[in-house]
Image 1 (cartoon, one colour):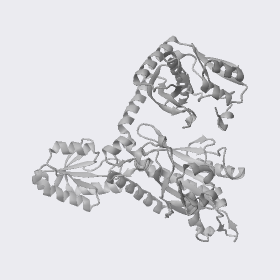
Image 2 (spheres, rainbow, N blue to C red; image 1 turned 90 degrees about the horizontal axis):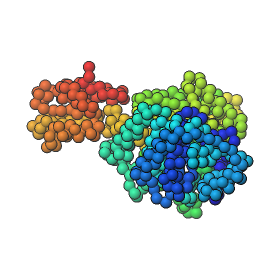
Image 3 (tube, rainbow, N blue to C red; image 1 turned 60 degrees about the horizontal axis):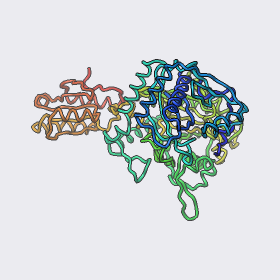
Image 4 (cartoon, one colour; image 1 turned 45 degrees about the horizontal axis):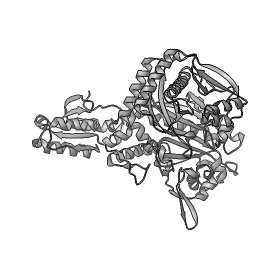
Length: 596
């Protein structure tokens, strides 16, 4: 079997297969217990790999038939028996050549492939009872330390993630230090199913996908209204910060990508078109084209910084098996911007971007978490350029009093970056924003400005996206809010409901007043019971139901109900309109209409 270059240089001695933290170690050990249980129940199965992952673990098995829910229940039962037996985890070292023969005799072809790809003369194995596995550890002392675990699901997974290699059967599980923590996690998983943006997207008529264009959402009126609202939010924020919006072509000659350096890295992920003996690509990012705008005019040091925003539609040829609702798509729109500045302006620009991140996330109640990603193994540029860029980002984070994690080797090929994560309502971590320094594009495209001494100098380029793709951000917000968006973002902000046809004209007048005030109002004057119409509006997550009957018509009021079920009572129409306009205009996070 072929072994990748990355795997061939993987060292075993002195390294671990998982973090040496208690929780990661526990999960790693639980994956071994699961593999042991599978081998007891299905001796013909071959084992592949079983790492600890965020919130759990998995193990891949070579088995023709998928594991059924009944299989998982049996495996979990045997795991309980292994835990009860309190088997010690014992480590032994073995010459690599001997280990190859050992696993070959046992018919474990995947372990043999891993071993043949390594260069370490000695490897380590771990045993618990009758099970032995190639592993660097660490592990808990014995299986009895595993107190709280649950098998969650099974799915297919290609060996080493390669579609040309065998399809294996992967079992996912989770393990926690206490039963209470496990129960909380299982609750979050169930809640996540209810909040799944694909489910809510259908129920709320936000978007659909169609087989004619996999990975490209079809935005329905409600969802497109949200996209427009977010774009309006972005443009307001950018105008206040002195950005200039541009628009660049979607279909671009490959020569641009070759000059930028992206061709060598992104060619396989681009949709390509041949025309008149030339190759064009649907752009997967906006950055090289922003250099065309910069080069359009002679630039002076007085012109800098220049901040160009480009909310262009992008395309990436993701594998069909990786497409996941709005989270992983082939077509998306990004709140992209590129800043061209002098080196002495760089830290100030980064500081402003960090302020923007906090400012943009505040209306959504999202708290940013920062990571500094440094130079990867394959990169462009000199050591000095990378050192200056990495130090500049770190200094800006520290100067703003922001704690950050170091993420070694995860920068882009052209420069280091600050990645920004958020925690949603279920405490799930999502990577959204990115701020990247780039010395390479200005060099490759010969970008210049005339400095105060009359000499041409290279500007520094900063790439940044704060929401990332609108598609993914809306998917995250849908799950964060469980579809109950704040009023300013809700597709329908109020639904006016007459008690009966007798009061339809009054309700229509209220509806028209709301529309005149730019409130997204709907009139529900169907011949259905009042309770049915109110319940339907609640299911559609409409923030406000405004009920119109005889008393309301006489007094010039409406009965205000919140989607939460709160019945505020009769409120003058003038106040309802004013409260809604204020709530929407301030992008308030909570429902305020009719509250004192």
